[in-house]
Image (cartoon, rainbow, N blue to C red; front, top):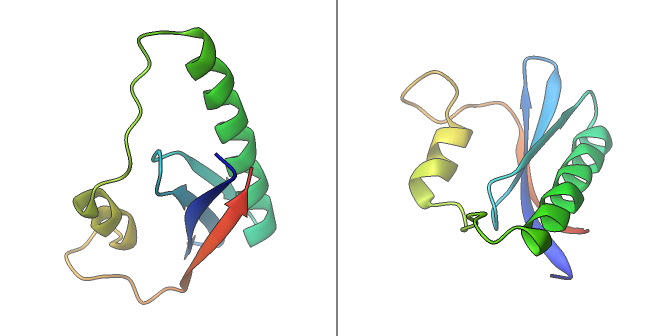
Length: 88
């Protein structure tokens, strides 16, 4: 895949990057750190996915995205988040 769709969210002083195509996450102190960690996770996952036949992959469901955007509560967070395309 040439690029992935990523949602970035700030949470308690860190940034979390979530890939919508596969549900992988990366976390860092800056947006760039979180994206770099996510790219590393995607690269590792793809290497395993190519060699193992029993690895499950699926896009994130709307319910899972909603859970990511809500932090320990029932209402969406007011903390900043953004949607970005990432080339991995």
